Amino acid sequence: MRKVRITVEGRVQGVGFRYSTKMVADELGITGVVRNEMDGSVSMEACGEDNAMERFIQRVKESPSPAGKVSNVKVEDDPSIKERKKFIAN
Image (tube, rainbow, N blue to C red; front, side, top):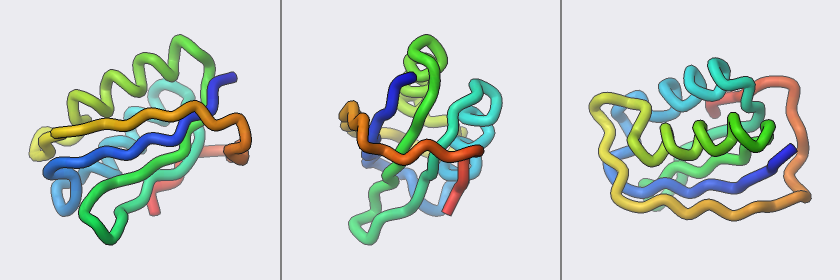
């Protein structure tokens, strides 16, 4: 089980990015939460199997939202992230 904290910058608010990210997470069996931040970025905590997590991170980097444009992604492993039962878009 891999647990990561992801921060995404670019055109990621107001373009369906969180909803699209949730759809990808549900498809891959990733649990966690995604939320908009005050600085215009999107942050998430995600938990999942290693292979699924690699695919999830790659899809986030490519922007799951067709209207979104990702300019920077920061991924940090964090074993202290709380496991959730599903993926929530806040």
